[in-house]
Length: 267
Ligand SMILES: NC(=O)c1ccc[n+]([C@@H]2O[C@H](COP(=O)([O-])OP(=O)(O)OC[C@H]3O[C@@H](n4cnc5c(N)ncnc54)[C@H](OP(=O)(O)O)[C@@H]3O)[C@@H](O)[C@H]2O)c1
Image (cartoon, rainbow, N blue to C red; front, top):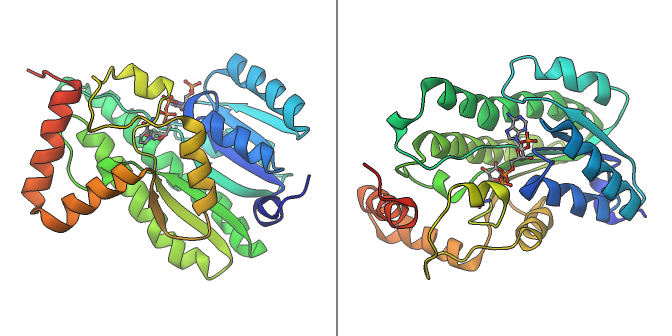
């Protein structure tokens, strides 16, 4: 099936963190829109299983690249698979978030998070962005988070990496947009996934946890239409109020206290 989406962003999409959660749903919805998919994550068996399910259901080609994206030499592993393929869509989705006080992480854990969430996204955008610019078409998505909007305690390093993704994405929206390459910084808002469950949030009327299909269709629909998007009406409204009507210290205090309510207590 050749959809408008496939004409613009096909024939191949590379999705990182595609073994489960949001990444898997990105892969499913891109396949549904007619793209062949390259699934990237660490769990080789899970990737093979998802590849089988997607190719059978949507009649597209699916390849897998099992790799730890926090490594330095990621292009040495990825390019032997992708060099012969036209990757028209890059979804920089892989990311880890663990809610806990900054100094309770080891420095190694924080560096791994920085390399996965930010460095890998940079390396892949640089590599595939060049080819898309030459072809004068394509799309790149950077997974950010609401925590990119202002400092957020207990996810300090994570929030820093997500601010990096948001600002890099918005900047490239302008720069690469001139060459027909659509770029989006996407802030999902709380979405039910294995990663979300791991942090064991308490329920609150203030947080609407979305389903992955809803979150991901919003992201794919927004590509090419705007530089960035916060998914969910409540999330957009909250960040509008925090940014427009509160001082910087008030908004940091507000989101950090809500982190304590949702995920605390912390020592
Ligand atoms: N869920 C939310 O509420 C939410 C909100 C805001 C932003 N986000 C962002 O959305 C993205 C996806 O989140 P999610 O909730 O779907 O996460 P998730 O359920 O934890 O899934 C993470 C994915 O990344 C892969 N991954 C983890 N470490 C990796 C590594 N070192 N190398 C390669 N792949 C790795 C995992 O597969 P393997 O374990 O097989 O490697 C998995 O496929 C993240 O960037 C996250 O920050 C999520």
